[in-house]
Length: 359
Image 1: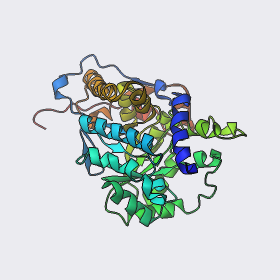
Image 2 (image 1 turned 90 degrees about the vertical axis):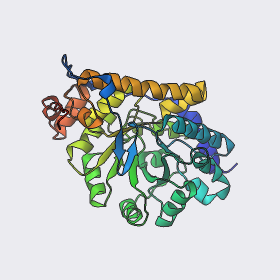
Image 3 (image 1 turned 30 degrees about the horizontal axis):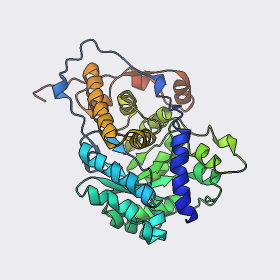
């Protein structure tokens, strides 16, 4: 077995054993209760957009695996079948393994085979060239491409990259050379407003902030080391703070929130902080492998239903209105935002403008 293939399987094994540490900061977010929401659950519309892609709900199955032989092929098949049933997008794991080893292509192509009309996102690291990007997109007839940023994971990974020069330049070249939307995605250490500014300057309009608080890739890679780099175990910007960093920049960005999101309340809070879409990985993978496809389908349906309940209670009839729901921020997230020059009152003193039939 190749070292890359072995690594893919180890990542799944350790992701399940490490779990999600749920230090995402969303517990610091509280909605301001509305006693007169003037809503009817039948009016609630949870559709949203990622660039030009129209989604039926703000739930995305985020990049997890592929390139690890039949086991990862079976996981991608199941995830794609669930995505098809639930009518939600799916991102595959990094396809560099299949670009380097054509025998691994089927572990990614299965996603398109079982869901020919669904929204499927390709995935590569920031080391990818324009040619790599075109191959990844063509491989699965992708509707978009995720480029993941994983500096900390690579540094902790025993065989990882140590040179991150010119990553932004490569991303810029890819954006201007392929025909599908490009999403730049962190893998669990959060994105700062300064990073968002640099990405926007390079032409990026879609980011997945990948905050700290979900699957900890530092912990995963440390399990593969003889000498543990424990100083990276608690590294990163928590999900809640990272969404606010990206949103406060007022840049022309669509924000995807990920990093420990597990339920409808996490989804609602992430959207209220500024996200348009929320992405699930570790929680869905564990559910799929432990309980099967049907359980994951039911979980997604329950999250969507519960989100409609929450929006009804808040008087938010759409995702756009939910983005204006007043929230009070406390704890570590409050202190982070204040020290970073982001005024929490911008969130607490706003209101949802009630839409009328004549509008």
